[in-house]
Length: 266
Image 1: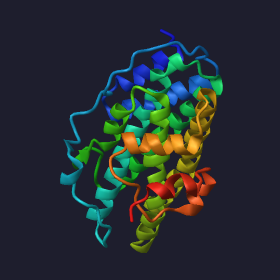
Image 2: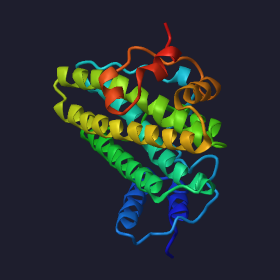
Image 3: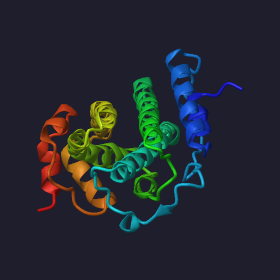
């Protein structure tokens, strides 16, 4: 059966097993680019996507901090945590495709978020391969549910979703990933460092896509982008933004300092 795009997105969200979810995501992205899927359609995504039995999901405060040392244990913990983020990011991209079709969005919007979903799926594959090389697999360790809590908090409004997920949570990834790459290089894990470099480079583009559509939607609604973003973050994101910021990466993604610095801790 041939799906419209929203129905195809739902077909990803309904898959629990990570490898199947990733394969389906990649196939749908390919079909969209090749115009084998060309209609948007509509769908009613679940509040939560299907999830495998493992990893066990714990409160963020109960998930152990990951420290990279000379052995593999710390690297496995880091890569596992990142793989969990990327699998959530696959679902977040397809959720934004399916959930907000009532906004009458241009095709370019869907092109961008299908690209994000495609790249997030490939990121998960990169990290799963690195875990396998270290004798581990996704699901071996506990993880937390913070990303999907943000999705639930913003499910009612596309502008709120854009404000929090790409422009807070993914932007935070730009801040912390360069230090992770350096630590992996320092312990001689060049392959994991290279995987994170690919992810970092493409995540700049994801933040830029979030910024583009946040600005577009503000213009449509007659809102000033900077104060609107700040108000939405204060309302829907728990806590302050954490320093230090990767100013260069954020600038490359189109995030102005006068947006996020006023919300920073310290």
